[in-house]
Amino acid sequence: MEKTEVQHQNHLDGAVNILSQDLVEEASRAGLDNHLQRWIEDLKAVNNPQLHQLIVDMQELKAHFGSGTYDKDTIGRLLTRLGKSTSQAAVFAEGNTQPRVEKLGEALLAAAKQVQGGDESTPASDLAADSSK
Image (cartoon, rainbow, N blue to C red; front, side, top):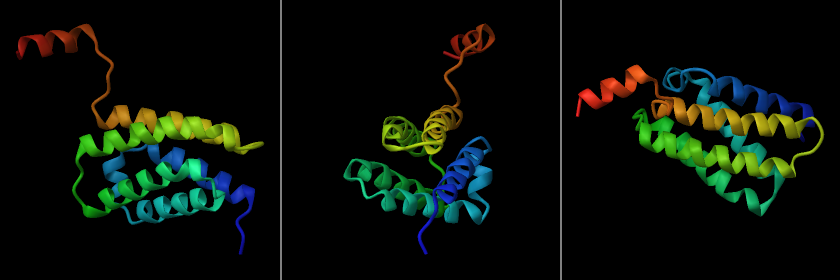
């Protein structure tokens, strides 16, 4: 059975929701693996060679989460690359799907920052970092 545009949009909304949660906690739940697989299948269904690296990165992320070991550098690198690539790929989306793809790109980049500890600094965190050197 062919997926409808609404099903694709629901997958995009679900991905944004998962990315706004604690990813390690989400990875411990059985549903993340299935969700990542649906996302990979949706990307493959577009049949656009320019999305190949997105598919490869998604498969690597899925395998990493499936391994049970969570290397924040690997996850952060993949999420950053996925975020940038997804934002660029939004031009291929149409109608109500395009803003969802754009939002997904933003959510991926935000999740990458979360995994990597964020890049926001405050005067207090700067002082703490300086005093620990």
